[in-house]
Image 1: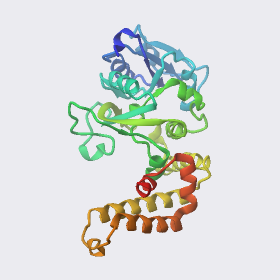
Image 2 (image 1 turned 90 degrees about the vertical axis):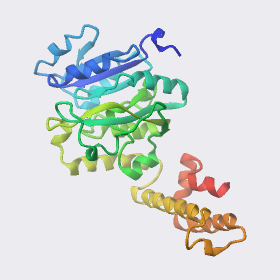
Image 3 (image 1 turned 180 degrees about the vertical axis):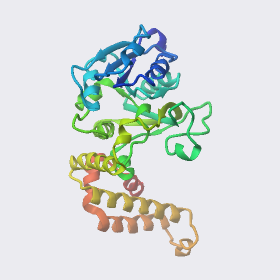
Image 4 (image 1 turned 120 degrees about the horizontal axis):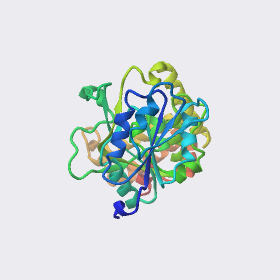
Length: 325
């Protein structure tokens, strides 16, 4: 696909309130893509010189919200202004790599069933310096080769098990129509409105994660999220997870129990297949069949009710695929 001749396919939306310090760099990174992109700045009632900074970029659209809004509401305001089939929301202090749009658009074209993408992300400080390696986990990939691999991205299972999204928010891009289909962002949330959107999208589509650092997230004391306590942020994340699980009749406790049992079964299967020490002494005539039957009975006793719910919701789990093989 020659994306250069199709016109802009992706819009970078930069929501900002009093972002004069960093927004110049954010806009420059969005305009510096290797393929044409739209850049839209939505000013949420700034009182500093943000609009003057944005005005230095004649090709960038800037609109103001009618009144002060939560971030979720401001993003929903921008959702009605997007004319491209793909969208990325940037915070005004974030940056994207010059090949961000090119890589994502090619991936969307190749995997047309995928609804959204994420990638690796470098964490930088207030002046743009890379944070120490120990602070980069889990988003940063230090050794990326010429061929960029892609793995399964976010899912309800992954997010419920870890409590987090696969990537940093700046690294996400979406099919615009799917974001509209799920109703956009929850305007009542103050921290996890992005996580909530991801979980709702996981209910209707799939995603991929690109193993390359295609964005940079700035970490500094002036961030709005830094004004919330860790406890408050964790509580809001858990609230949106619980809400997503309730849509399928689960509680967080029983779902986590299912995940732990599933992981334990996986380990047992792999151990028996590789005939590790202590397992080889079983010397089963038909080890695979015997192991499968044993584990099937065990698993049914541990979480048969939850497994049946998951089967109806998500189809065959990895464990059930092993049993059926």
